[in-house]
Image 1 (spheres, rainbow, N blue to C red):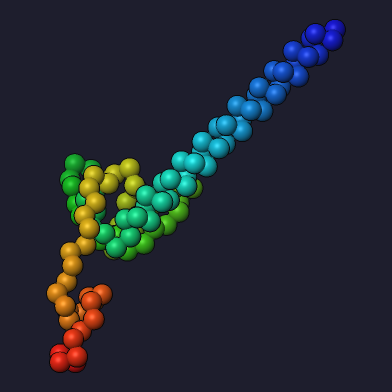
Image 2 (cartoon, rainbow, N blue to C red; image 1 turned 90 degrees about the vertical axis):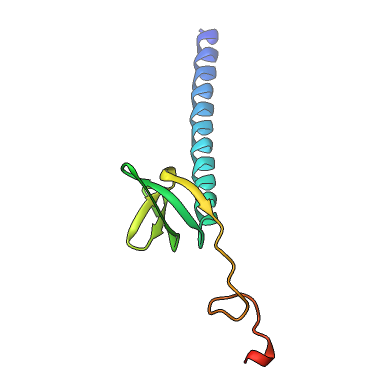
Length: 107
């Protein structure tokens, strides 16, 4: 009788460990996906839309159904549909939106 009780406890412990491992894997996937999506912010991405490959600048990231979705204008793009990420082109000194300071003689 004691052997059966020990076996049942071991089986229950194994199930709990499997559930905990699956939960941790799900959490890791969600965190990694959110990090990948936020890395796209401000960048131009190419993505699949049906048979077409479209592109646009990622304006924001939304979490929908526990997964990140890129927002490009009015379009929502699943991270799994992204085929390329392009770094934004640097603008010339003094251009609007540039991160570079404008020299004093141009002010």
